[in-house]
Length: 255
Image (cartoon, rainbow, N blue to C red; front, top):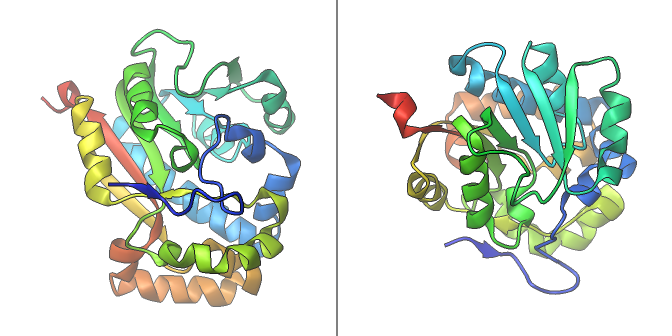
């Protein structure tokens, strides 16, 4: 089963409102510069590829999306996006970033969205599930709000993330105050969580073989990108990459 890497004060795993950090200007700096642009590109490419079979002009709920990293490319691709944050103050940055785009905003508990069941074609949450105190309840809330599909990402036990506690202090020095502990997951338990909600996993996309902090530390995507391309070509990223983007579809959609 999924377990937090640590429950210690120096490596906290859970937060009731993880979007508090991810919606901040400081968090956005983690994705600035060439290395950050490369990592966002990998994430966006994987996201758009996974949802492509669902069709065009989807109604999408972006849970905890105050970072606007997913809402903007989804809106640019023609989808109708609503960002849900746990408090109105956490949507301020996204409102600035999304100005001029047809993107809506909601405030409310991330694990109990203030929407009717099945209100959205797709419900997605990036960089959220690994910080939730009860991740299975969070997945259930996503599935309840989705008419067709859900998409989330998670750090895998089958990746270099397993050594994070050993290098957490160094990681924090590189990434600053936005560095947080997180929970790791086995692919099987994520699939089973979806199945218990009447959803079936349909596609996955492991993003990087190298830890993301390594990309940021080296700061040369020409080099790290070449290493990632080689790893993907050898099939290593498929088995050992992280974070893992995962799309699950409501079973009634499969009939």
